[in-house]
Length: 174
Image (cartoon, rainbow, N blue to C red; front, side, top):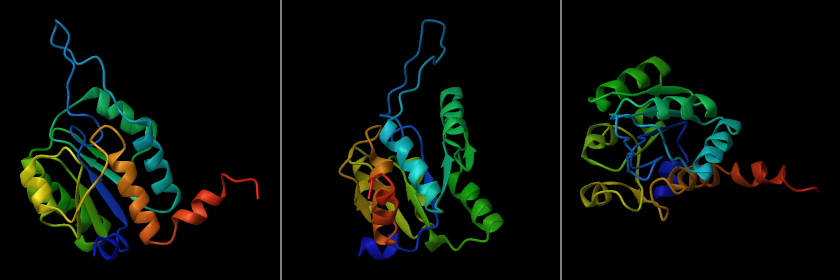
């Protein structure tokens, strides 16, 4: 069932904290957040998605310099931080990009993601998402947040669209 949903995806929308990160925030004695911990597997998944024509959009409820820097380095198509009404932002994006919601996947881990998730065609959660989210989505990744959950989603989408094997061939000396 989820393969059919994944086969239609043109855009992956992802939360950050609890999806691209493990959900922990490091704060120094001055209240600064000097570090962000992101998975290299997710980073390469973003590279793969772009190479295969899948856009990546970040919508995060929290404003974070680390997130903005990492997203810029990865060339993520659109990045929105400090967004509390994710469903409204998602509607704006879909309208601007002239996308049908069933052409979008959303991966999130907590209640703030429910509104946006309710709009899209393919709903996904990392393994360690809150139970309410895991009960609601179409697919729960085997990978935990901050440990390749987005990469697993990208692989699944590319395989369902018959793009994965062709992409992988470039890494062999055939």
